[in-house]
Image 1 (cartoon, rainbow, N blue to C red):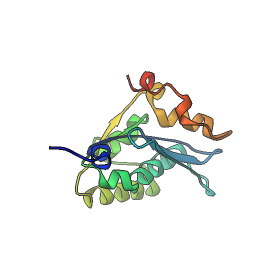
Image 2 (tube, helix red, strand yellow; image 1 turned 90 degrees about the horizontal axis):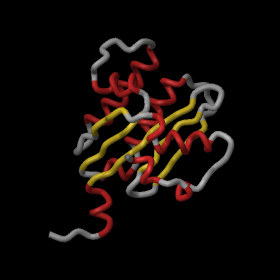
Image 3 (cartoon, rainbow, N blue to C red; image 1 turned 90 degrees about the vertical axis):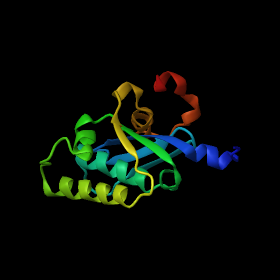
Amino acid sequence: MTYDAVEVKLQMITVYTDASGEPNNIYGYCISETSEERFIRSKFTLDSIEAEFMAIIEALNSEAVRNSKQTIIYSDSESIVDLIKGRIHKPKGGVVRLLIIQILNIVDNMESKPSFAWIPRERNLAGILIEDEVPKKINKNMLYKESLLR
């Protein structure tokens, strides 16, 4: 069986999400296989948990994730991953609860359900990008991706 280049890219994708709440109010994601990255600076004040959830929502709504046969979404926030996986059953705060419901609704309506996993901060490609995104925009190709993915 042969695949064209687009099909191969979308067979399995790896998504890294991260955020920086107040005062930066920035969140986003990057996808290794497509070199896609998207970081959004919110006009609204977000705490770190809200911003982390917004990053995941943005990633879930990306065309690459929606068209992927298999997706793994990494976050360096263990509590966020646990909340999404249902390991923590009582999220505090109405906004957080609504964001979790939104994520679960998006996932429920996807043909191929993504997996969520925790990753250490130093291995989170989005986290490294967001640190530089706060003061300026950088070229992801300048990073040694292989060392980050081990």
